[in-house]
Each structure stands twice: as C-alpha cells, then as structure tokens.
Image 1 (tube, helix red, strand yellow):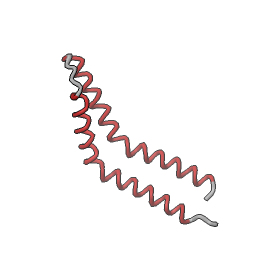
Image 2 (cartoon, one colour):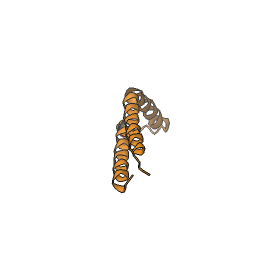
Image 3 (cartoon, one colour):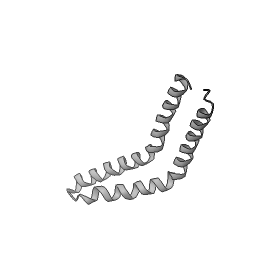
Image 4 (cartoon, one colour):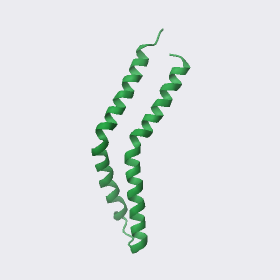
Length: 89
C-alpha cells in the first residue's frame, strides 16, 4: 500500500467519523443551548436540568440514527479491508 492510498483512507476515515458523530453532537448542542436559554430566562439554576434532557435526547438520536451510523461504519470497514487485501508484498 503506498502513501496515497493510506492518506486517502485516513481522509475518508476522518469524514466518516465526523458524519457518524454529527447527529448526536448536533442534538446535544441544540438541547444544551435551549436549556441554557430557558435557565437564563427563568433564573432556574438546577444542575440536573442540563444533563437529563441532553442524555435523553442523545439516546433518542442514537436510536433513530443508529442503523445509518452502523451501515456507514460497516461500509468504511469494507473499503479498508478491500484496500488491505490489495497489498502486494
């Protein structure tokens, strides 16, 4: 395997990692932002109010997009194994 193939696999791996993590991170970001705005408006400073909605909605996001995440990761691993099988010693 030459450097070009390794660099291309690394680039695609970074893109896949960003794509797979984006749904959960985006949900956590928007939930955290909306809870923070709610706390600022109502002046409620309860610590569990920030964690519980994030955990619940991150779990929902994982349940909804988990199949897509798994198929994306499996596709990338198939690509990696196909490239590794083409190695000439």
